[in-house]
Length: 152
Image 1 (cartoon, helix red, strand yellow):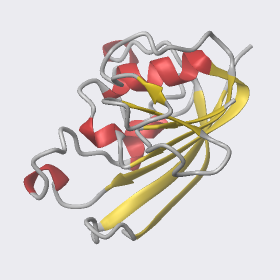
Image 2 (spheres, rainbow, N blue to C red):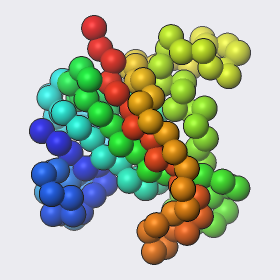
Image 3 (cartoon, rainbow, N blue to C red):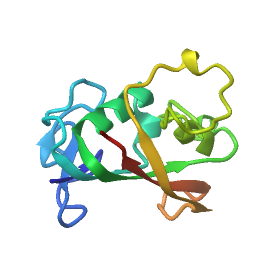
Image 4 (cartoon, rainbow, N blue to C red):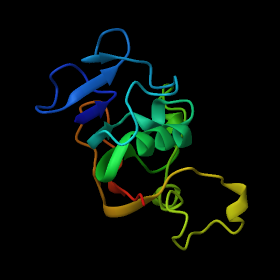
């Protein structure tokens, strides 16, 4: 199964979208946990300009890891740059690449005290790139990052 978290019905061929108010193929609020999927059932996830709108992004990533099969890919696009929350009142968080590096407990990271971050997940960064935003309402820079779910 391939899912598009925060996407619209029929927006991306081959993916089931998950969104609120019947905007998606699967009606679910991404701020409510757990997500309506069994453990280890999803092959691929897309989250394009969604994570910055959700209340608990770390919990979202834990849920995403829970539902992913081992080796599943997670594609994320998020705005980056000077405080995006100043430009969009619907953005709740700003992100940098380092935030995603902390999603791998064994990776060397900038966080000095690993005990401050208790995560129940493990993602490797497969790819990361920056580019000028292509969405009509977001022309600032965006980070495109691909993660791979690491599981025993």
